[in-house]
Length: 338
Image (cartoon, helix red, strand yellow):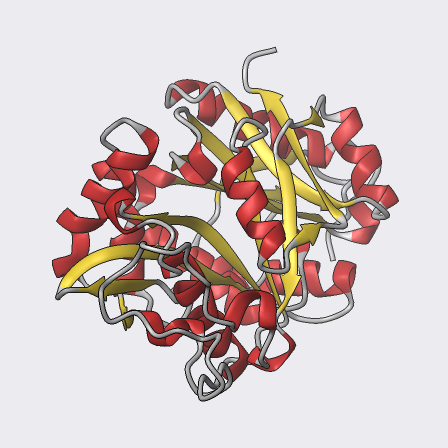
């Protein structure tokens, strides 16, 4: 096998044929193979090459390292287009020779050419090796809050699944009084407050309308991209809509994250959640999360995670109320141009 000392390192775009080498390098680092994850990432890059930056480092004809990232626009309430660093790996006998830096510099150059100002990523606070590399690469802590919640098989959780009590005089005329003796919260759960359905292409206009009413700007491109992912790969998207009066009044966009940021356990990432302001305080958000957790439990997803902008105190308060708590993972950011 060719050694790093014997040959000059070259960097080129990652190709489908590199999959086995990438899986092997990653498995040697993390202790378990993530073949499905890398197959999805390579397939996504083939579908949308302009949104993905994936590079391989070679010594002669042998792959000794790789880096994968994708361009995201509007995630977690941000206005800017970012480059999200998803995976990085260097073979054990090639570490400490500047290969990771070469890959990272190539990625930064790609981002600069594509008009991207900032890179973002995550790491567990106790992943000391990754923390050291992020510091070396110039990353700093990002201001966002990372919060998560255990799925626990989708089991009943009162703070999330119990119907929301409305103040007197609010809600539809036929609102059930759950304070009466015959009320049964375990039979009528939060998700029974609305008609919860899987998201479809026909929901785009309603989702954009609701999102615009919340964030104050039109994010149709971002929403459309997320919806395209839902339809292109239903195995990793678990997005839902809520209907009342036969109208879409809320939505949650989420995906099963099977490996981003070096994770080996299955995690669901909540990208965005929204409720029509005219239907606020009727338990729509609880209904969406109640059904989402039930679905994730059936998929054996262990945890739901999201990021919240520091100024979005209302969303952060809602998530804490339904069982989310500060995560053991930290967000990092770095300007592309140094």
